[in-house]
Length: 275
Image 1 (cartoon, rainbow, N blue to C red):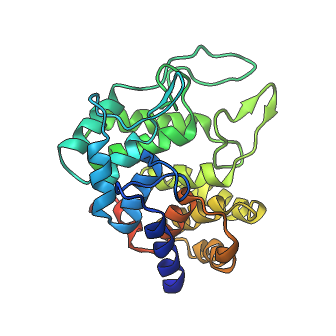
Image 2: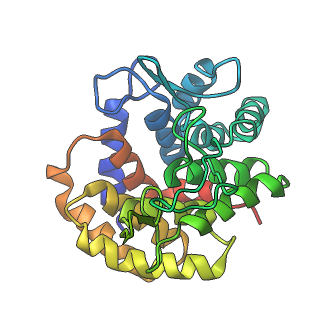
């Protein structure tokens, strides 16, 4: 199913790959860790893995630097893309030592300050997506670190919205219950596959609603198809059909193309915990 879509997305990603083996957020832009890691997962691409190995920092992280901000949130994805080995172990060592800052609870934005998760950048508050990326790396590359995996799960439990699924950060702000979003919910579900059945069930039910409400977003469609397929939900074909129908007019966003390739191709198996 969707073999033609897989081939078209694969061609687009290979065309976007730079001469250095990495990929940028769009074709022709400098290579970055996140799109390169996702392409390595989606395509089982040795050149992309070589770029990652050559661009790992001394502290084990994979970063995107913008002025004074150092975003290391791609480190978990890179650890998965690299496969088992020393480079992945160094990446996980970095993750374990970089739990988000403890921010005191505030009645305006209530949260459990002991459930910190991971942040977009060092020394800041934890968010759902970087926590999901860290959890994915931990469970696939260091499954015996139950403390770190437990930290990630507990943070996601604390941030789950009342209707199931996840917003970007807190479920409540200034007395308002915040909605879940498709992309964030999908990425959390990819990371926690098989770890918390009741929370996953609520997330899947939410995602089955959300992708239809957010169908204008190609990244939401791609991540939703990947998450639902990973969880064995037959409804994954819905967002995949939408992707197939709109492929010719999709924006040339490499991250979206990577998740589309993962959703319909063999790269999804890389995200499954070994039995």
